[in-house]
Image (cartoon, rainbow, N blue to C red; front, side):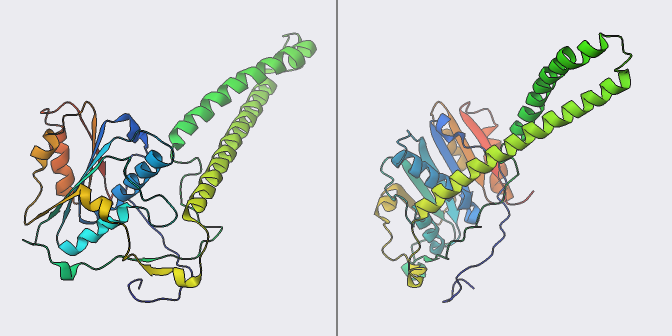
Length: 303
């Protein structure tokens, strides 16, 4: 539907996957190696865009990025153009050490006729547009642990205050005016109040942080243009910087064992996304013991 001219202003889309650890600790590695097959390159586009933004706008020292991607046909090479941001974000990746090794498996030589410019359709933004996530955000398990721990600490403090300044002056530890049953009821009420307070604080804090991130994303996307700008072709998309960092290999598959073992950095994080066999092969190489510096993470579009 999107390949043909359309006058749609909005399109509701539900997206599922990919599934991977909700981690952004990319900066603690010296080298990031991303291995993809076909559409498995999708999550890596977001990661590289984020690293470009962090290295250009936030002046972070980004790790070296090596993208090993395999495609069936040369027409799929246009997916590499999506690595550079399109709207409102910096397209200068000079601060990022990026190396792309692209493999076209079913063609012996490039076929320029099959390569078509990417067509991007930009819809009107809406105030309710927001990504779906857990109510406590991507680190919900950490937040749950903090809620339980802080609730217990607050419970002990409140219980001590109630016992010392309310129960003891009246009962004097005689258990006549405040029986064990009443004390148990007070304990339950106090722990419930503590959990409600801490959980509400965590939810409101995450909501505030999500609103800040949403505003930042909307500001990066820029102001809304005229309707004619929603449908545009990226014929003038700056591909020069990418072409200098890209090596295209035709008629062959990547020798993953050789390529992964030759990266001798002190700490290398290896991502794999794509067909199950590809992910299993990369996992086998990283766990073979031939290199101690490889840390494997899998990204899958299915459970």
